[in-house]
Image 1 (cartoon, rainbow, N blue to C red):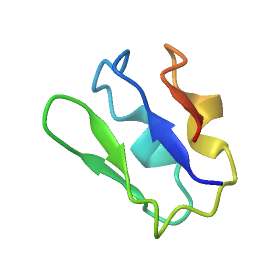
Image 2: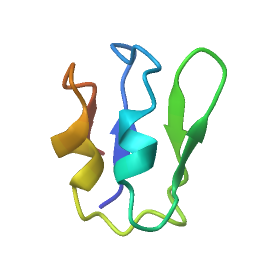
Image 3: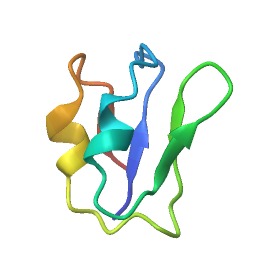
Image 4: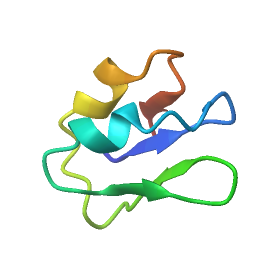
Length: 56
């Protein structure tokens, strides 16, 4: 199951740097996770300082 970035995202980019497959990119107002690239490892959720990333 892929992860999603919720509205609490502060656009710090920490999650993008922690993604081992490069599935996270800057979107409109917040970062976004490409569901087709995400391997559901949870590295992004663990690195988010505001807890804005959850399993879909």
